Length: 309
Ligand code: BEZ
Ligand code: FE
Image 1 (cartoon, protein in one colour):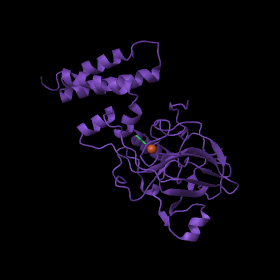
Image 2 (cartoon, rainbow, N blue to C red):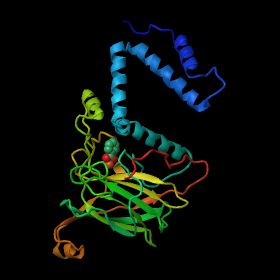
Image 3 (tube, rainbow, N blue to C red):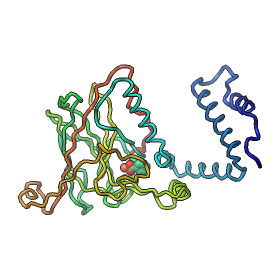
Image 4 (cartoon, rainbow, N blue to C red):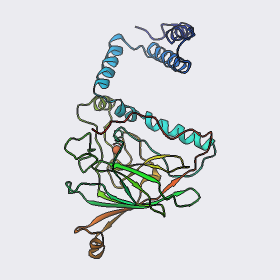
């Protein structure tokens, strides 16, 4: 067939009718969004001359992705989760909210309700013989004030790049903790150095990425939600410097400000002080939080999470 077969006015009218624009009932915002998306999709089908076979192939792909619960994986893979971050960054800039630790994507692998502890925690259960990682720092406001009682909710993958809960071989909440900062705003944890996540082989996400000539790998990283009363919730990650995929994250999560220096500790006295018997890695990373202000776009995202059993 040829491209541009349908007059744009016909498409506009069809989209409006399909979205119920001429009806009084329903949710006006939903109608507005559906109207726009439908119109844009019909224009794309017409201009790209998308065939029947291509269209139904796409629907079959999405149907299977839904059955496999993969939309949380496809969304970052096609840059949309990062795009939402860019929009929030710009909205904050326009609201005069400057500074603070850079945000980056949450990803689909958070589980609510990890065990809590005060000031410090051990995240790993000792079954993974990875490089020991000590990470510590301070949570402060952008003006430098330490924030006591801030909650540092941290989660990361094991040395195979797998996350507890989604990987049934790991114990519940392995490599997941919530740490409340001490009176000086400090947190500290012991864990193992993670490896980067890779999209499950054979998944719908991997199939799409491969069809676009892309890979489905992330650099090693550690996720954080940092929250405190009166401050804007921060969703971020640190990336592990030196990882092959550091600048080639399939989920577009790497940001220059989020690549801390890693110290490799080999001195026997320091190792002994750390209470372990082999060299270890240390990362120091402080979080800087912006104050909540009325009228600024919210950073607390209502998002469905997998639930711990
Ligand atoms: C992750 O954080 O591990 C992740 C992020 C986006 C897609 C898949 C995984
Ligand atoms: Fe992750």
